[in-house]
Image 1 (cartoon, rainbow, N blue to C red):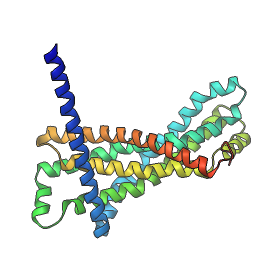
Image 2 (image 1 turned 135 degrees about the vertical axis):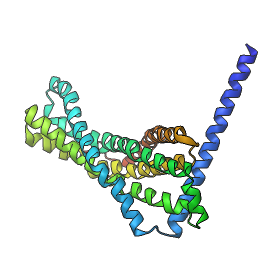
Image 3 (image 1 turned 60 degrees about the vertical axis):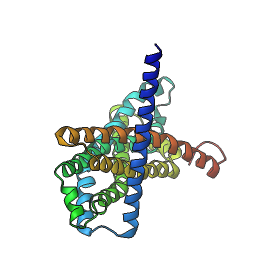
Image 4 (image 1 turned 180 degrees about the vertical axis):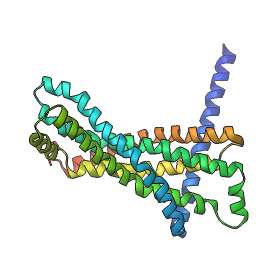
Length: 274
């Protein structure tokens, strides 16, 4: 039994050391990315290509996700609100949930699967085939050429895609509530306007700046440090999505606490009615 306990302690220590080393590695990777972002801007052609790949090609999946999230919220909330005779308040709940939490988190999760995994797989393939080493030999810094444009694209476009998801979710929830559940449209919109304010939209969108940066850094880091072979590329893509998803949830918790505290400072008068 003593040997088993010692082995357990050794395993925990090894995993803790691996976690600390990994955190330090990704922190240095992020610092190098920020350094190149300040020193020299990437070429316009590289930025536009990454904007197209990350932003334009992600529009259909983000819009579809937002639409169905709004409809699902209407379906799941209607029965409870009907028992309390508060059906017209459904719009406030749906839109508040969308712009504050579900829109940003689900949009970022979808993009972590589509964008983060793709970046890890693409850069991992370049690492395995020694293309990244070739860039360094030719005098081009791989971080500046490969990572900075992707980081900028995620930082700028994921908040914009989140707004698209929010809009489509609001439209989907409105359509299902008004045309299928036959809730009065005037009171639905009036309650939404009364209970969903500019701070809700700001806080939800501001979160995605951090989500986008995390997705880009984690995806590129796993691609740059990919293990050899096809199995290593697949593992890098999987780890990029899993670690991005966990980081998104952790950031959402911490930022949610911070924005709630900020709201209490800015609006100490009580509940959100603007």
